[in-house]
Length: 135
Length: 402
Image (cartoon, rainbow over all chains, first blue to last red; front, side, top):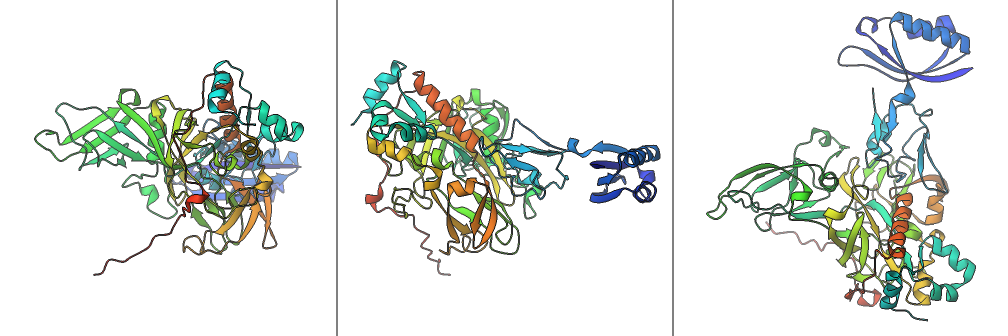
């Protein structure tokens, strides 16, 4: 079983075509839409959590790529600028999925990008503005 | 046993001073006992690194040709308004100064990504800053407009002057309403969704000298990565707040006004900060050395997080409406555990003040003293103690009759 979060960019020509429903129908993948929007350039942006058998997941990804969807792993999208992070800990209780963890010994904060769902709340909550969102 | 600062400085000069941070000293005294440690240890260093809004810096930019008088006109540093009601080329920039027209601040909660604190950080980092000024032309200062890049190394003076820093304890914030609120204590989730606090606790300067027996006007400190001095009591100085038996204040008590040459400071310790929905500010690093002149003074430095009480205040109603209705009391040890129980509910906690950075400051100051680079000063005047009766009062509002 795989459980991955991916970012899908739909070029203009694909925005009104049913792509994600094919993932479910043809490849029996469970999905959770974390974010979906159409950008100013009329391109589609979706953050999707996909769960299913590895084989089906791989076939699903291949299908998306063939259809012309551009894929990225989510962990590349929300990053922490280590030079700016002061380890104050303000992020810890604003993150809805607990992606920030406090080390009770060193009192430093770690960011677990695999848990991140790119909601964007920490971007504005971080006082030294160490969190960056790249879409 | 009593020691003097002169005796301690003699040891520092020889590189023989025995120094511990306020965190380390707890274990040292537990192991060896108060009496022995008071004789052996010379200095305990403290540190704190948190947002401190009443901070700022003043500059003398030097005269232009022809001369300009900034006072009475308007001056902006990277679009952030500075205060010019001083002599011709003297100006003051506050940490919370906000650009006039940043569209990202116009709708609540504004982002406040850039303000006075950020300009100060960039200046200290050696970056060029845009200065744009319009002025009231006079016979002796005829120029009306000035648009120039400035850099800290060209300024005659660049002095960090913070009128209120290093709060001795502070409120612990919660939100009892059913809407998220955006405050200087961070984002507070509804119905006691989270609790925030802002103090270095057992490392905090004034919490290690709760009755201000060693820290006074003229005390030499670590400030913003360089050297600074305590200039005065900070604003809202409140020595008569309720205290525990150990003398630890249960709410905001003393504060320090500090000053130092910005040119020898570092952007690692002066960080431009943005509080969503509230405003920009400056996060400041301060470290104060405490000379161990007696057993009593040493005793105070052994304070631990579980002996420091924080009073939980509701920031949705009680705080904005100046109501004295605390929600509860917690210890800093409980706050640092990540969860506290308030009104029967387990509430997650978060800090706004960086404890790892406070440790780094206390450790850096310890190294400076041990290597003989930093000698202590004798305060020239004390801060007002509890016997002064000084109390932080609310405004006596007297509306002006129409």
